[in-house]
Length: 504
Ligand SMILES: Cc1cc2nc3c(=O)[nH]c(=O)nc-3n(C[C@H](O)[C@H](O)[C@H](O)COP(=O)(O)OP(=O)(O)OC[C@H]3O[C@@H](n4cnc5c(N)ncnc54)[C@H](O)[C@@H]3O)c2cc1C
Image 1 (cartoon, helix red, strand yellow):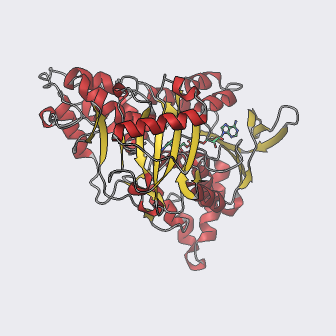
Image 2: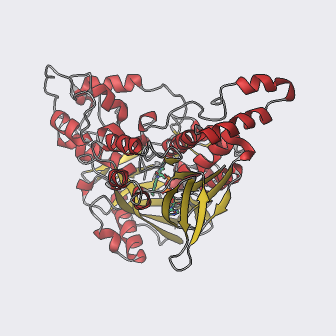
Image 3: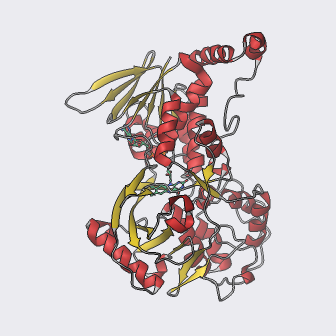
């Protein structure tokens, strides 16, 4: 059996790894990516000799799947952040992010006092019905604004969501971005009761909420690719995908010199737009559902400044209402002790919000200077000239899940019922956070592993893995008992991806 995995971001890599784990040595896996490296939005680089993450920065640990995977890959324990506070800029000053809120939404609006970034209006009494009808989805802003007022949305929820999605509370789906609150809103009649119920339903975790593979996210991606035993085809754009009587035909490479590859099954782990293009030839209705998803563009400016010039904090978020170009600052060396370098301060500044791309049209040098000037203004201090600057642009990188996104994706997946050897995976479907993408890749692999040809391979793999004496038992064993994250579903509701970072 030959499986082609199109897209070697974390979703495709996870699918390839899981396929190997489920199906053993008998499956041939080809990993294709148009880029010249593994990892997609996971990419680690260097600025002035200091290691930096140039895409995703860290992993939400509420779902242990990444920590387990890193362990299985021999990468050791994840590095942890220092327990430092983060701030939100309000009326020109940096104030602490209020504690005990759900993405900035408090259980009791009166707990937001004037020392914090926002004050809430008292919530109107609840009506006779739950806040949301069963299965309905709205934007986060539509739920919160009429109940707690504009300040809570504009100064708390918006910057927290913006730090993750570069999107706005009034546009983003409640079901995708705050799934626990979405669930609670379908049976509670006030927002405060719904927030309380959502918080009570969240699994209790001790220790830090975030971590990152100590060797960096690129090393994690490369290790995952190696452990999948897949044949890597980098610099290999897939331009067409077509069903054949026995499987799939992929057209790879330039239009002038195309190459054709056949596969029994395909994992499509590319963002929504390229996925829609590849689907359009044989599943136009599915392509239309998938291709609706829009993306925000952002830029990251990393500055290496001489000396210890940043406050003792992990960074801050900047609401759009404050009028700065930067939307977040992460004091990398403070937040991540394993990345601290002697005699310099490392800061990562993020610019660009959905629908506001003008600032991103600046040349790199101007963008870096604008970001540095904003940082100095917010800190109220002069900053030295940087000894290292890196501008990383991410065009069309962050999915903007509107209300109803999950229903669209369910329809798209149902529309592929007649193609059981094709599986969709990635941030365009299930959620933006790295753990969600890993599970999305796992679920895609599991779909393909359930096809008859794969089922035979899985049985053979189980037998081969079992000690000789145990082989009869192994033959009967549940094939789902294999490796990290086993038996768990890939779903946005597994985590709150909105918590992936408060400093980006
Ligand atoms: C700046 C930034 C910061 C982030 N920070 C965090 C964070 O701190 N924590 C977190 O959990 N998440 C974070 N995220 C989100 C997270 O990184 C992404 O959601 C996740 O990495 C997406 O993985 P993916 O595999 O689904 O897609 P991608 O990483 O986009 O991978 C898709 C791959 O498909 C390839 N491809 C596209 N078209 C084709 C084609 N036609 N043929 C072949 N290959 C193709 C691309 O080259 C790419 O490698 C961040 C994202 C960004 C952009």
